[in-house]
Length: 439
Image (cartoon, rainbow, N blue to C red; front, side, top):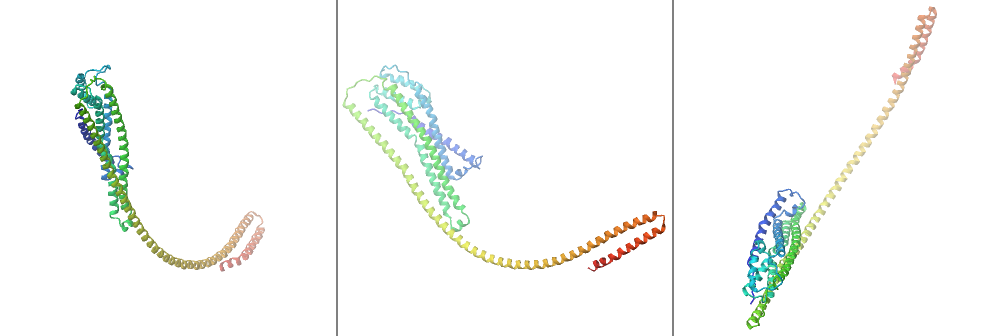
């Protein structure tokens, strides 16, 4: 009966990749958190998404998953290179005896360690060991198909860590949502809601920020994981083609008579293949059920919490609205009473101002009349002063004429006339001066 000979390298590589992903991913997450909490990104707009412990764990899971995907993507470069180089000597299209399998096996062993650990080298080695142990190329096609299926299963199982992290990140987001909502509504009372709504909104922000971060990180990781899986599937298909091209027709196949023993071996191989296929199918179904059940529970919990939160917020808002309405009614009544008192006081003040204005207006009118009379008197005095100045000028002229006149008598007559005129003027202005002083 044919058996699948597989080295222990794939499991060791998976363990090493997991360890390297943890060793590199966790410090990377710590550096990102430090840059947000102690570095230049502390005041950024996305700091709110890495502020709480649940969000820290989500970021750690994401960094570990992305590190594992990056390592797998880097290993694909070596895998693709192994499919291009000549691990085995070139074949001249002539079948060779099965005994040459050990020589070809030595050619595989001479390759570098990085090449020997690839899917291509391990596939060639497994086929050559199968032929070397049996010393025959019989049932080589079945062996190639078995090895192809085994590598596909190994590649599928190696994604266990990444799928677990991809499944765990949204679960952590829902957990953060439940914790945030619980903390927000745990101590929420109408009095607290009336004083400050921030005690509720902060918890809700934490809850929904955790969910938003988890969904965003999950979408990114699923997209990258999808790309890496497609490349790995393409690699396995290339390995299948290369292995079949180099080994499927390379060895001579001797025709052997069918015997009960070989028939039993063939039937046993077919039965084992069916058992393996059924086991793999059952394992896939178990994984699907295990991944689907937490999502259903999380969805139910989220709906219940959302309903409770909606009900609690509705009651709190109704109580707050009622309290505000009562207070507004009381304040409106007090405001109306105070406004009435102020209006009465303003009416009294307006009446007092009106009476005082009338008295002041009457006093100002009397003062204006007195000022007008004094202005008339001052005008008359100003005219009299002008006449006196004119008379004084005439007197000076007469004196000058008297000094220059040769006839003294004429001067005396002129002086007498001037005195008479001055006396007449003075006698005419005396009543006005007396009247002005009496006024």
